[in-house]
Image (cartoon, rainbow, N blue to C red):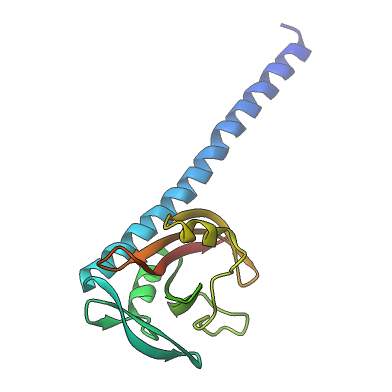
Length: 172
């Protein structure tokens, strides 16, 4: 073999190896998000069935109160913080208010370092399209101006009506 052919062969093998590694890193990230979502859902389900009952004030806004069993999620950060601690990511519980979804429990931070409670899911973002069809969304999303690898999944009540959203994600 000539040196040029050897160089081309090495280059081709390097390209194949690089392409083989790319999907794996994406798959690992996807698996990380899916695993975190399973944990959030499982921990919420252990508290009891999801329901909306009454209203509550979150960051100065009157919103529906979302519960898992008898545990109110509005302004309650135990669940999302425990998931974040175990997964080293971020977690949120949203409640549906009209056509919007409001963060009522989150460890996603605003630029000032405070929790982003009371903020709404981007009505023009990628995730909302899937949620409106009662389907989960997994992929990249912009959250308050920052890129995340995310998972969003509808929270259903006993009648299978979407009353909120589970969210998990990792800052990119």
